[in-house]
Length: 249
Length: 263
Image (cartoon, rainbow over all chains, first blue to last red; front, side, top):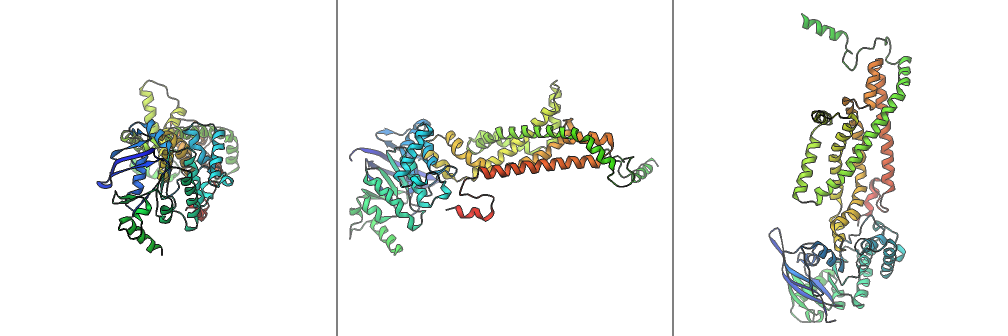
């Protein structure tokens, strides 16, 4: 619980001359669930995608278990990404592959596993998210919640050291949010290290070890949920959460 | 005076163009039993030409497929230089008519002191042109895929070449089939132009029989029917292929049914 898994230091990113991220730094310890919250456009998604260089940051460094990521080295970058799972808001399952193949393809192409071993492992992971019986269905035949659970299985199959979740429930119908959150809760309780951008405040309050509040590309508040969200405290985070609740009500 | 006479002569026999000389045996009606006889006699010869046409088109399409896919990938994912090179290639081969290219290539070979084979020149010219068109079909298909597909593959640790090979192209190729069918039907009919080099394909054989027997209308009608039948057969096969490789849950080509699967 004390070992640093991921260190993000001084990440900045500009797009079209406009600063999207300004000097973002934080450290994630093993088994920790960090929750990124903030208004849309705050840069939560960009920050997560900068961590595994899907959007290359302009400056700053990423360290994974004490090793600095060398972005110029393609092989190193691929090896780094293979250890950092990513869950997208809109699932991004491979549409031409069944659920099982979606999970197995990276095992085969990146891990170099045999077809048989990869399929076995894929079934095991799908079982873990409760989708073993749907392994032969294609993404278009699955519900949103099921798609996101397949995406979780796909990330988990790579045995990631940390998982980045980019608003995993925002594209889901309200009644499907629960099944995805259940999987994430399960992971958190089993000690998976995760960074999650979300608007699910109840979830964040219940499970997050730390909340990072972002606004205009900066992390402006950082702390345990019971500190930031404590009754009567005057934080930007609490203010934002109250407004979210009002809108929901 | 001479001018007058020539003009008069022309109006006197309206069918005296080089391709349609008046048929001295035709007295009344367009088709006679003799026409049918000529067609029947010439059919094996013309069908032999069909084999040549099919081979040439198959080779050209194959060439377009083999080179068009890498060109499309280079144009979408390549650096500025690669994109510029593909752009130039496509610009040239889409900009010059096949007929002109046939003569150009032929002349190029002759001026190099080589004895060109008309069949190979035809295949080469159609192949190069089809490569240009097909690369644009594949490019369109690749670009129509959601950005997230490549992102997700990268996030799993795949390198770009692997991601393109196992994630992007399998989906892009499926989307390309309708455009590719279109390219086939255009190329098949364009292949008729190759008769100018003396390639022994449908059009050239129909033309030579017509010149010998003066049954122009009948022979070109036969040629037209053969092209028509070939097109229909191959398009039906491609349609089957499209259905066979369709991704379950996505019902492309069935009108509104495709709308229910998004989201």
